[in-house]
Image (cartoon, rainbow, N blue to C red; front, side, top):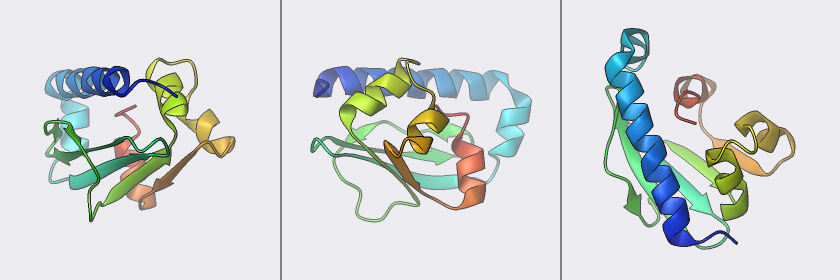
Length: 115
């Protein structure tokens, strides 16, 4: 099981990188224009995080469950750590049934740039 602080730090790094990319990439900004979604990351290890994407910006990463999320990512902390550290591609984790994403197909296409 990966350490909670380590996972949180890795997620914050991803959020920061995404915000930077969104700021610099006009095509990405346009793709996410008027796109607002609450995203929950529910880990089997009782580590849960959530954030909001709104108009190409990610809100502050928060700890805890989200009662009503538009997009929910379910996995374990080791798989999430492997994805965030680029040891495993998200599609590989999905194909191996190590990660589940509850989202519309269009939402999945829009958030693929996040990870």
